[in-house]
Image (cartoon, rainbow, N blue to C red; front, side, top):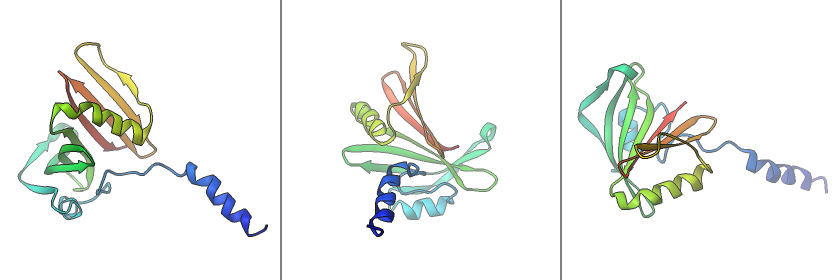
Length: 149
């Protein structure tokens, strides 16, 4: 019986473990080269980095990603100072997959909070201990900003 107590304790506490941070094959803080290597061919370095001066970030890699039937276009934003990954932007390759994107995010992170003026755009937000995920639907097109808090 004494042997079962630690096992039962672990099993009871498992659901309390924090949600997985980061995104897909990436980890927050990775360099652009590390993201490309981890992607196993799904991402590549941009020939010319897009500077986002107001946010002190730059887009240094982009590509595609498949999550089962969901096919996404991706872009990776890095801190302009440290060079570490801070955000992953992604959107379905086809608007026909917008509903699948919402289902996938809800399955992974639970029910979102919703905001935005009706008719113009809608924002759905999920927050974890380490991440903030915002799905924006505008003109029947979805895109996600998944960032480190």
